[in-house]
Length: 61
Image (cartoon, rainbow, N blue to C red; front, side, top):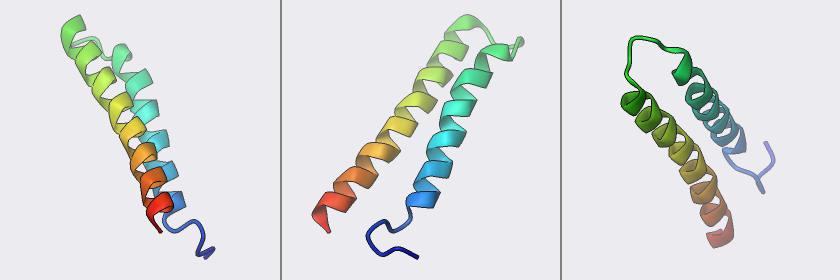
């Protein structure tokens, strides 16, 4: 394991999963548009938060 990038693989998997979920949510037909928009925005924000948090953690090391 490269010590300069600890847990990068976990962050990348989380980001990919959240981005994929945000693009797949509009395909769910039983939710109304407001719920779909809210969930998509939340998952994209979560992915962005993971990246920012990882970046801040790398800077503070």
